[in-house]
Amino acid sequence: MSEPSSRNSPAPSSADVPQWINDLVPIAARARTLLRATAPALPVAVTAVLLLPQLAPFPTPWVATACMALGGFLALRHGGPAVPAAGVSTIGGSASGQRAAPGASAAVGAGQQAAAGTSAATAVGELRPGGRTGALLVVLDLLLSVTGLAAWAGLALAGTEQKLLVAATAAAVGLAVGVGLLAVMELVGRRSTAVVAALAAVALVAAAAAAYGLTLIAPSWWMVLALAVGVDAVGAIALRAGVRNDRRYPQPADAA
Image (tube, rainbow, N blue to C red; front, side, top):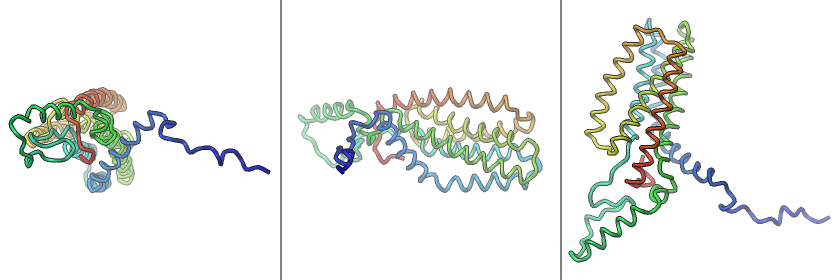
């Protein structure tokens, strides 16, 4: 009996893989890098939303504050493009130690423009323009969902009424803060200490206002729906701005 012909068939090549899979693989790798970088923040947030309902008589604003702190931290820590400084190559090298002749400066500038005009996916390690922002949006959604589930468990242990609604509201508010900050950083188009400090101050004021508002207004599923729709709209704006920034400032592959 002859052996099956499948054993003699050639192994599938990269050309046989659908393009959308080739696009998702580097985004997943980027998201994994972000998850590793933010690993210490998640246990802190989960512990907070588990303990706060046991300590506070009215836990809604406190749980929402913990979620907003997590979303804001992720956006401020990893959001926005890292604009290369003058004389620093986007591949990771520095041009400060290279002494070019005066007559060769024009050629060097032309070479840098040509390199910047190449595919941004190559410059960011196979990431297509917008993949950096898309990966952070995925991480924000994932970590806030996990924190929301932990908040649900903490509220259930505390015997809070409408625990699922309160947990969903807190997670949605935290996601709104994170995506909103990310969108602003992408629209600004430059990540610097001054920008991060200014946005951190704005985020603190917004978080305090939102926490106080939750003490006056009872959460509802309509509020959660409105926040979800708003997050989707603002996330689309952030993604579009991220595509523009990645084409303008190619990021190194290991940038986090």
